[in-house]
Amino acid sequence: MAVKEVRTRFAPSPTGFMHVGNLRTALYEYLIAKSQGGKFILRIEDTDQERLVEGATQVIYDTLAKVSIIHDEGPDIGGPFGPYVQSERLSLYKPYAIELVEKEHAYYCFCTKERLDSLRISNSDAEDNSFPAGYDRHCRDFSKDEISNKLAMNSPYIIRQKMPLSGKTTFNDAVYGSITVDNDELEDQVLLKSDGFPTYNFANVVDDHLMKISHVIRGSEYLSSAPKYNLLYEAFGWEIPLYVHLSLIQGKNPDGTVSKLSKRHGATSFEDLLNDGYLTEAIINYIALLGWCPKENIEVMSMSELISLFSIDGISKSPAIFDYDKLRWFNAEYIRAMPILDFQNRALPYYKELFGDMLLDYEKISEILQPRITQFTQIPAMISFLKELPTYSSEFYIHKKMKTTKESSLEKLKEILPNIVSLADWSQQNIHDMLIKFAIDKEIKNGQIMWPVRTAISGVEVTPGGAVEILTILGKEESIRRINMGIKLLEDELEY
RNA sequence: GGCCCGUUGGUCAAGCGGUCAAGACAUCGCCCUUUCACGGCGAAGACAGGAGUUCGAUUCUCCUACGGGUCACCA
Image (cartoon, rainbow, N blue to C red; front, side, top):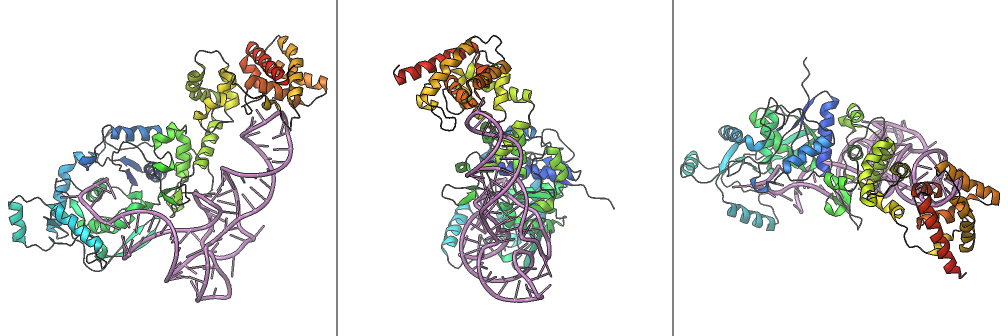
């Protein structure tokens, strides 16, 4: 028996940005296809002429390329089932709609927008929901003559799906199982709009069939329209694909409630996340786990590991809250795992922006930064003290655990200064040995000397790296200058 | 409001009739240590509630509560 080829598709409408929910859908579609040796297809759904956004399709290409979700067929690379842009397939849908009219699974509707609007208002007012399915099916039972008359008069029309008035429809979903609804709940939804364009619901079904899509993977916001899809497939006599509905991604509101992830929760598009300093690998890894868990229960996974580990039965039904803390952790994991040169390359723009043409040991800076940042965007704030010594309070010299005071700090700074001045070879090892030797000679704890030195040369309470590293980076001359400034600050303060 | 879906620690989640109910993030403590990180060790913290079914329910069924989705000539 020939096994049917797995074909999934990502069918975004070009809105100009990639919401993480969409990205996760694309990822799962890709993973399902690739984990079963199938094909992943990109199809652009741009049937809404009023919402066209310039350059929006490019955003989709760019995003997918950046995260290594590579499509096998699509508008830019073609394929055997093109075109892959719905606006280029327009002539295709109408005949299918008419076929359905002929099969009496659809009908012409001549209702005006105004009538439908007032209908909706009165319906929402009515407590009894006289026509629960939204539309009152006014045009459903027109006679053949009436219809051909109106068509002959060029009356604008739409085509609606003719839902069964009784009975039930059951459909199966790979994650939600079997779901049954009463047919009288189903609206006679619009298939073809008055401009001749198909609606999303209709184009989707037609295209998925024509493109031989085996798995329809989409957000659970479409779950309640799934029965209508089933009925459409049945009306055409087409094979129904496997539905895989994905739970929503939610965000936590300041007041503790949750709702669909949106702007007010923070960065919600792929672009936002990149701007906030997240790596594509971290983003992909994190969102892969938002609603799915591998059997082995491991967390850090590359794309190829995701492909080999992915399976539909690991997808969960309940919605997940987007957790920026966890994303940050993934990001830090990926940052720490980078070869130092890669880290350096990514950090370089921040160094250059901050330091201009100052000569500093970037490699050393990268070494101290790599284990400490969760996002590259944190770099400037963390090391700006290297560029310029901030004005700081002498209180910084007081540290309980190090047992340092202003007085002790002043004393130690004065004592260590000659050693620093006379240090010939300014290497990290030498600097380290010199300071440690000082502590041993004076029979003091390392902190007694390290703390005042680090404070004097940094001017901040918390620094990435310690006194030794910072001295190394700053260089001898600047270090001496800063220590002298520290001595002066303390002397003035203590009124010497 | 009708219909549909969901509900294991603060968050992501494992579990698929018998477990002292995994693990990760976050939190807290200890160790390492010249601050901060990294790393190591440890602590606290959960099956929404109620009925059934069963020798036995987190797991199966029903009800309630709460949360979410959906009700367009948008996708």
